[in-house]
Image (cartoon, rainbow, N blue to C red; front, side, top):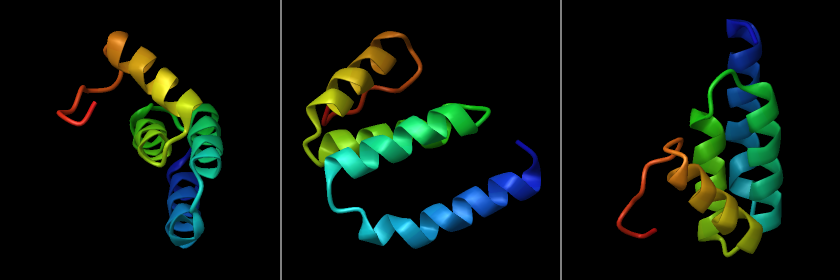
Length: 77
């Protein structure tokens, strides 16, 4: 993606974020970010949010990302 696309994506996420109340919704955003973003940084943030919201698939996938060294382990993990 180019800088303009990145900026538009992050602007959209800023608008959407307060309305995400379900782990499955956060997981879907993580999945989309994983496909759209050149790095995993934003996707990992949303994988963690989804896991923190209780989404079991997100917790499992976040653990796989931690095991692969893509995401950092945190004390709450």
